[in-house]
Amino acid sequence: MTALLLVSDDPAWPVALERHLPDADIRIYPDIGDPGDIDYALVWAPEPGLLARLPNLKVIFSLAAGVDHILRDPDLPRDIPIVRMSDPYQCDMLAEYACLAVLYHHRFLDRTLALQARAEWEEQPVLYTPDVTVGVLGLGAIGQAIAARLAGFDFGINGWSRTARQIAGIACHHGPEQLREMLPQCQYVICALPQTPETTGLIDAAFLARMPRGGYVINVGRGAHLVEEDLLAALETGQIAGAFLDVFAQEPLPQDHAFWRHPKIVVTPHMAGELLPRTAVRSIAQGIRDHRAGRPLAHVYDSARGY
Image (cartoon, rainbow, N blue to C red; front, side):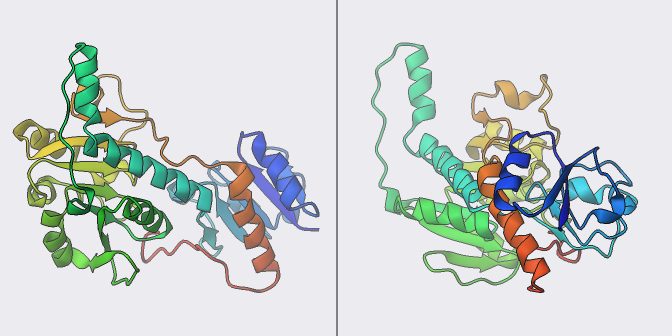
């Protein structure tokens, strides 16, 4: 019998796992039983050394799209594949959030809500959507879902990735030089990148200066992608008109942080793409079936790429 160790305090996970893996022995940390029984581990921020104590562990499944919470373990067994979470519904949620953020500014809701607070009636201009271009940074499953939803509203879509891609409906760019060429075309830039050494601090003063004056920044990737002081400076000069931010360098965002009270910034508490066990469990079950059948695993973390 396959034994899977779950490291999560979400009570929905055991229910979902038992439903989709009825023949598996589901063990919930800290009730491990015999460590030698464990074949697979599904984890969020496991305690250091835990995974190294499982001598027959075959695959580690991450309870997140990122794996930093696993890699920080100094005793992590380096020969065991780590599978990143990839849930189509989570991609849908992130795409919904991105549409909300773009339309919030595109339909001048920021201005309208400020007027409402003063009980002032003032109609706002109407923009021709096909004239507006959105840039999507990162063209993995999340970035493609975002681009497809926004293309459905008839926004022009530019996409950027580390390596060359060809995706229908997206003007694809890659590499540093093509990013510099793309940015002046994009009234909105949505960051959906993984965090790597190359993407850390990517959205800095030079990046923001290349965007059209009065552009908008939306970040659903990682807080470390954005140089926060550079964004504040660009908002002060009007180079950037507004930002819609769901991820931050420090989370929870400190109460004294300037973003909380900035009139041109919308802060949300890392809620753009929640992980729902009822949908995400399908990818875990499929991964275990693939591994047991000798098929290649999908979404395996690649240390050379950083994601």
